[in-house]
Amino acid sequence: MATPTLPAAGPLTRLRLRMAAVRTRRAAVEVRARAEVAADEEAISGGRRRSVTLLAAWREFWRHPSPWMIATVLIGASVARAIEGGMAWVDLVTPLVMLAAFPFVEWIVHVFVLHYKPREIAGVTIDPLVSRKHREHHVDPRDIPLVFIPWQVVLQLLTIAVLVTVVAFDRLATGLTFLVALSAIGFVYAWMHYLVHSDYRPVSAAYRAVWRNHRLHHYKNENYWFTVTSSGTSDRLLGTNPDPSEVETSPTARNLHGAA
Image 1 (spheres, rainbow, N blue to C red):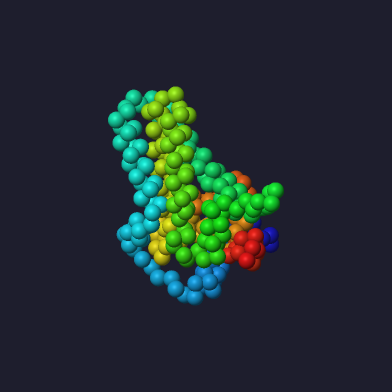
Image 2: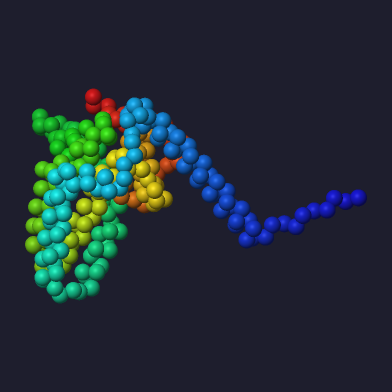
């Protein structure tokens, strides 16, 4: 007697099975990654972590100079932009372009400036302050003052931004729109980077992804996961968002370039 055969799965069923398999693989990767990061962080911090509320983290954030400096420019630029008036289409497009470009700008700065390896040129060592402080940040990611861009660098960047606002645009209004967007993005960057290194624990899925990626960068391998304010954007497109389970823990994650 012939054994009855089951009908072949239809296209929709096959698609559902494929999506379910993808979700299962992603969940397995997340579990492994979280276990690896937790083990690495436990080894580094000695179990010092404690959970704090978002409000407590916000209050601590304002105890450092960089947020005040950026916020001052943001508020001043916003007031000046409102007084200047004269909205045009470019004032809508400019912030959107800057927002879309920022993950790539962030990636480039992180790779080529923050991770810059000191070089000697004509007998002079080139080693910018921001690069030196970032190496210190990798040595101890739990040192909160080192989380922030040095105030001297922030002052220089804000001064340059104001000069660009005044001289690089044919309309002052457009320049002020640029300055508002730039300072707002800078403020969000400072907040996100601080929050990731604080004792605030992730709640939302979006923030958890950012939190996970940056901890992998610090505690797993410093050659990957360069973005801080987003996950799966420029890192994915530029090839620095691998499966954490396939990446070895780097011996220089806390000692960039093996300098120490």
